Amino acid sequence: MKRFQPGIAPTLVVLLLLPVLIYLGFWQLGRGEEKRLMLANYAERRAAPPMSAQLLPSTADPAYRRVQLRGSFDAEHSLLLDNSTREGKAGVELIQPFHDQSSGVWLMVNRGWLPWPDRRTPPVFETPTQSLNLDAWVYVSPGATFQLHPDAQNGSWPKLVTAIDPAKVWPELNREGFAHELRLEAGPAAYRADWPVVAMGPEKHLGYAVQWFAMATALVGLYLYLGFNTTRNTKRTDTHNKKKEKPHGNRDESSQHV
Figure 1 (tube, rainbow, N blue to C red):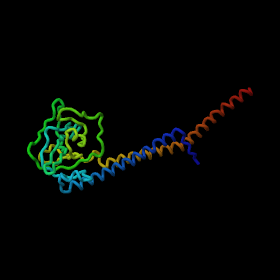
Figure 2 (figure 1 turned 60 degrees about the horizontal axis):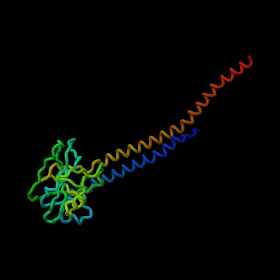
Figure 3 (figure 1 turned 135 degrees about the vertical axis):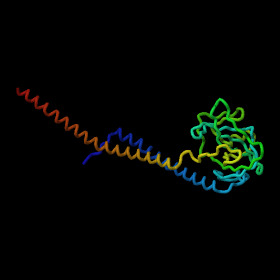
Figure 4 (figure 1 turned 30 degrees about the vertical axis):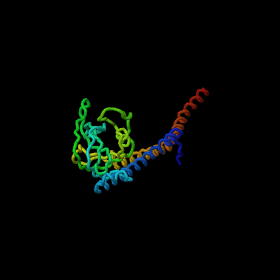
């Protein structure tokens, strides 16, 4: 019966890597389930009729809910969300304060994506001055946006930013407003409004989970293979060395007799 002797170094490597690989696999499965629920929630609420902006501040879970707006934009305080691309083309998302007349609520409305091919000149956009009837939906960020450095707090308008948090913008404007971003549906005042709900779908998370579990299985298989075959190789080496030493000993004895 073969003896299992993997050695200290391979055992330590397996003890360190195997829990990490298994953890990453289950983490990807969890992320995939979160994305699946997020997409289902998005589809359900996007199919519902729009609600009044007056109800937004008292809504416990406003994510993805459609909202009907009537009011006008504040053209003096525009935000340009950088690092946004469409079909490989660089651009920005135009975000402007919007005052809803029926409720009196200030809202931060994302009007969509517009191209910015030449960074030497500012992006070109227009802001309607008349009162508008708009349909939008609430976007709640799943987490904080990664930034290499925070955006400058002071500066001239429009401001170029890498992340948007309406709750932090309203105090700068000396206003009280809704804490989440609203994204326009296609229609008047909207630029390109085709935001992906999630950057990575549930199927990709499932694929990554399969890869992590496959790596864990391969690691265990290699560990077992080396553990059982190291003993066999050691026995073969010892037998080969003994055979080499035996003729050498006979030759010494013959020399002594001579």
